[in-house]
Image 1 (cartoon, rainbow, N blue to C red):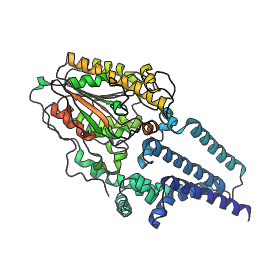
Image 2 (image 1 turned 30 degrees about the vertical axis):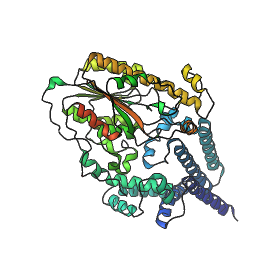
Image 3 (image 1 turned 45 degrees about the horizontal axis):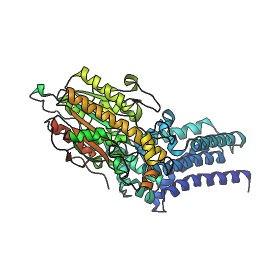
Image 4 (image 1 turned 135 degrees about the horizontal axis):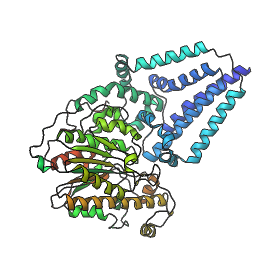
Length: 520
């Protein structure tokens, strides 16, 4: 075998491995030819493009293998940590890996990720420098190929080709469960199917939820300030184990004594993907109405104006503010919050706090909320997105409540230290709830206070050890009335209805019968 043939064979073998390894992680079987061809297409196109540019088969195959291996590693990690595979909208978060690595790398293992990336880069550069090209690459063919690829992608993203392609892809019968679909069609095929169908359906799914005019309140003196807190990873952790202290959440218990409505909050995410619960609570739109955009409504769906709790309250004369002591560009909230009807979006630049842990503490953020509410007046809606108890949580003993350490020990079970660190942060979140309850009750008896968790914390090993398997977080809603506490379990998109009921405002959110359900 000649050197050229050996190089071509080795490059082809590496490209084949780049396709097979992610399929192994997804449990994909050999299926009907259309799905196999679609699953193979990204690997073939990438390898072919690299080969045309470099004329080095082994280099091209090695780069594709590194990309395929990296995808498989990310897919496996996400399945373990978040209980779902990589989906098309995750690509919009790829940049966060470099701008906010502390939010991602600890789940995968920083040494493994950084070491693997450096090894892949070093290998690719070595092959590029020390292997001989099979031909001399010419600029003209390379530019032509890149131009053709660009034009093909542009045409595919425009009508009518976009809709025609989506119609054809629906014949593969994806069911909308990424785990099942990835196993049946292949992981790369599912990325294409979900992404193209979501883009084709997006405008039609968005239309029924455009902002609608709302009737103005007759008695403007009866304004009730509204504070709604999306608390990071908050839930009633006493559900984890009977050995949990009964007095773990005194702020939560104080709300119950004030006659709160409370209960489990059904969320569409576990461990992360805050934007799913956030969008549901703000818009009242059930996730099945979003199609494949349900995986990340902020990826594209919410970039255009959408009827929301904020836009409806603004139509009633409220000043609508969003507070998030973090990077305003994370999840592109700087774009979506404006589309969702907020007058102002205050981030870390205004609120202060650290870019890295420890972030803005929840009790400090509560006091800022009260200061802003005093300045803005009663006809104000403040939506708060906390960061104080954001994971990942370290396994060391720093900042762990001594009583919790005594109760559970440390390192006695997998992720035990991380769980104790989370519980310590949870008590600070509960302190925030208590501060808001007492101060709003003392100064504004008719204020509406909502407090809920966006998802459960990603502590799969600790929860498995303790026999805890749940998806629901918790919420609590308090207003100026004093009555018996009422338990009402509900889905996240139903929460704004309770708030509007408290304000005696007709609910216009998420009710359109013209919005189609998820394509099956």
